[in-house]
Image 1 (cartoon, rainbow, N blue to C red):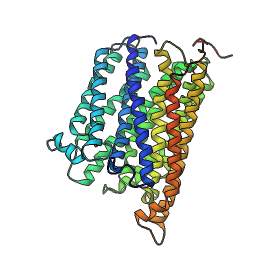
Image 2: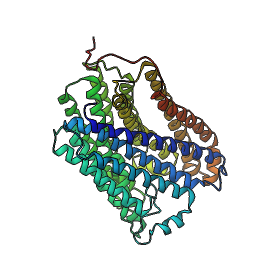
Image 3: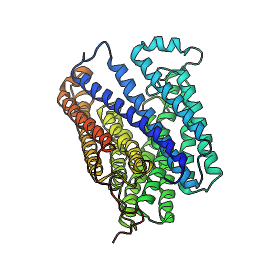
Image 4: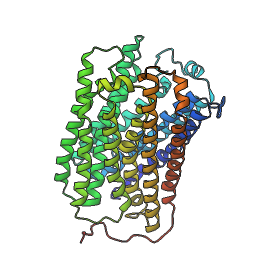
Length: 464
C-alpha cells in the first residue's frame, strides 16, 4: 500500500462482506419459502425477505464500489485522498442509515414505515429495488455526492489516468441515474418506463464502466502488462458497453405500453450487449497470458479471470437467451429472468468486488498476498461459490423453461400456482446450491484469518 488514505477502503470492504453474508442468508431463507410456504411466517413474510435480500445486494455492492475507488484512486492519482475524514464520516452515515432501513423493513409493516418516514411529502416508496424510504434515498444522494466530491477532487488534483477517468464517469452516472428513483408518476407505464432508467442504466450501463476500470486496475497490478495495452482494450469495451447498454434499455419496454418501435430497438441493441462482455473475457485472458510478472496473489488472478468469464455467461449469454422480443413475449417475468439476474450480478459485480478485496486486503495488512494456506482456502471458496452459482442458474433456467411451457405455451395452460407446484424439484435443487454458495462465502471470510507460511515472492518478480 503506497498511500495511507488507501486504508479507508478496509472499512468499506469489511462492511460490504458483512452485508453480503446477510444478503445470502436471506436468499437461502427465500429459497426455503419457495418450497415451505409458511417458513418463518408471519415473522418474516416472503415479500419482506425478498425486499431485504435485494436491498442488501444493492447496498453492499455500493460499499464495495466505494471501497474499491478509495483504494485505487489514490494510487492512480499518485496522491493521498482529498478528504479522508469525509470518507470515514460518510461510511458511518451510510452504514447506520442502511442498517436502520433494513431493521425498518423487518420490524415495521411497510405501510407504517412509509407513514413514519413521511413518504406522503415526496412519494418514492413501493417500487421493486427502490423500496427505501424517501429519507433513506435522500441520505444515499448525500453520501454519493460527498463520495464523488472526494474522488473527483483526488483525481482532478492528481495524475489522470484512463482507469480513474472511466471509473469517475461510471460513478457520476451511478449518482445521476439514481435521481430517477425520486420520480414516481401516477401513470403506471410512465412509472415503469423511468424505473428502468435506474435499474437497467445502472447494471447494464454505468456500472459496467466501474467494473471495467476495477478489473483493468487489478490486471495491471498482477500482470505487469503495459498500461497502454490495457487502456486500448478499456476504451473499446466501454464504448461497446455504452452503445449497446443505453439503447438496450428498450428490451424492458416491450410489454409495458411503450411505443412498438422499442421492440426493434430493444432487440437489436440488446443482441449487441454480450459483445463487450465477450471482449472483457478476451481482454483478461490475453493480458494474463502476456504477463511480465508472476504475482504471488494467485487467488486475485483467479478472481479476475473468473469475473470476465462469469460476467460473459451471466450478463452476456443468459441475457441474450431471452432478450429478443419474440422470445421475451413468453419468458418475461419467469424464472429465466431470475436465472439471468443471479448469474449476471454475481459474475459482473460480486466477483469484481471480491477481486479487489482479494488483491488489496493483504496489501492493507502489510503483505503482498495471503499466506499459502489462505490462498488455497480462498481458491476453494472461489470454486464453491462459482460452481454453486452456475448450478443455481441452471436449476432456475430449467424451472423457467418448464414454467413457460406449462403456463404460457401449452394448449392447456396451467395457472400460476399449479405451475409452481410442478417446479418444486428445481427449487429444492436451487436451495441446495444456495447452501453450498453460503459455505463458499464463509470460506472466503475464513481465508483472511487462516494462519500459514507467508508468500515471500517479490511483486516485481518476472515470470521465467
